[in-house]
Length: 193
Image 1: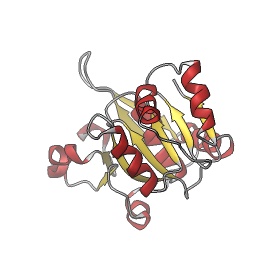
Image 2 (image 1 turned 60 degrees about the vertical axis):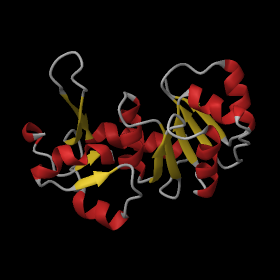
Image 3 (image 1 turned 135 degrees about the vertical axis):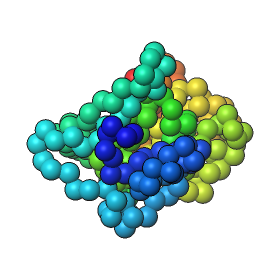
């Protein structure tokens, strides 16, 4: 983090204690954020090839490495998400996994590029599938990012989905039988793997 000269740190709540001493503004991806706070701590990036953000690898294969995401790339992703998936800042995103895998790249880009509302981050591993479905319905989630296994668990629990739900599947390949079931319970289905 020191070599990146960051303006804001995006992270999960459980990592806060590791970086709080740095004195940088922190945007917790597990807490519904206040857009006023976001606008005050996330700078307006210059256009062109300037760096919009730096994502760090886990360091499993050695030292963590920073990967620069250019503003033009972020703009392209945002345009695709807005145009193809029809994602807007009114959508409510629920991520069905911890922010700890390669999936975090698309999650972070969703949050930054579209200003989608991040309502909750959960995992059926921590809750029963029925509890997770209950939270999805109570929060009126319109966009879910999940693995095929998590979605299969939810369907097996009796989840009926809703006609406004956009389902983004990542983590591993999407099997055709699951895709057919998900198409029946959602407005859109996108396999991102």
